[in-house]
Each structure stands twice: as structure tokens, then as C-alpha cells.
Image (cartoon, rainbow, N blue to C red):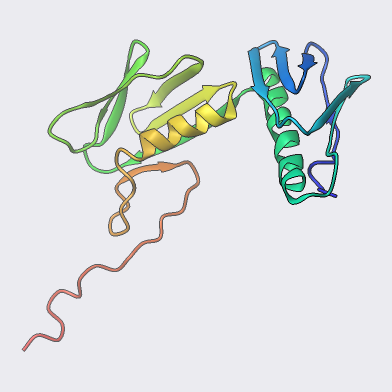
Length: 182
């Protein structure tokens, strides 16, 4: 039995969950999310406790059991608390600035890079070297953070670039600088 899959999901007050033929819609104070879950998974809601069960021990059912439960749990957390990812910019002259909904970034290219967030995602720039991405859908928040990070990934010699908050960059030693020359 999947350890994650068999854990129940507690639906907090103010959140409504509707299940129709494995189409799960979750509505809460921050918004509404919906997703199609695998057709074989058995989803039940009893007394504000949501459970996901699998019909058999086939490999496909075992692999979908924990995934289905986690996707639904992420939807419940998203509509109640939301998700945030913080990025840090390191490097001389690298910075970000908010312009309306868009974010203008100077990353050492010959032109500024303009990021326009998709619907449901808000990007905040509390400092020129910090970007905070927030939203209710964990998948889109993570995808937006990865897209921004990919514009200038941190390099291993000086650590310049965009990294996640708390990410440790493995540093390399540069050239020896003349040792061993004749």
C-alpha cells in the first residue's frame, strides 16, 4: 500500500470539494482549482475527509495512487494558503524591477528581459535582487520560477545568476594562474 496514497486529506472549513467521475474541483478563499484524476482511482469525501483508493495492486494503479492523492492535497493547500517561490539574483549589474504586472530584468544581455506572468500568478520584487512568485497552483508557480531561473542559471565559478532561495551552488576553483609554466 502506498504510504502517501493511504493518508487522508482533511478539507478545512470554507473549502468545498466536488467530485464528478474523477473530475475534482476545489473551491476556497483564494480561488478555484480543478483537475482530472486518473479514471481508475476511487475518490471519496466523507465528513470533510477525502480519501483516495486504488482498485488493484497493478503497477499502474500503484503508481497513480500516491500521485492522485498528492495532486488533490496540493489543490486543497493552494486554495487555502497558496504557494510562493523566492528567487535571488547575484551578480554585478544584475537586477529586477517591477513595471505594472511585468518584471523588467537586467541580466547582462544587450537588452532587458521582460517577464509577463500568466493568469493566476503574481510576481513581486521586494528588492532589486529578489523575486517572489506566488499563486494557488503549485505546478504553475514552480514552472514560472524555473522559467525565470533558466534565463541566467547560476554559474559555478563566481555564482552569478538567478537561484532559488536557499539553493547551494557548487563552486569550482578557477585557473591556477601560472603555476606549472616553464
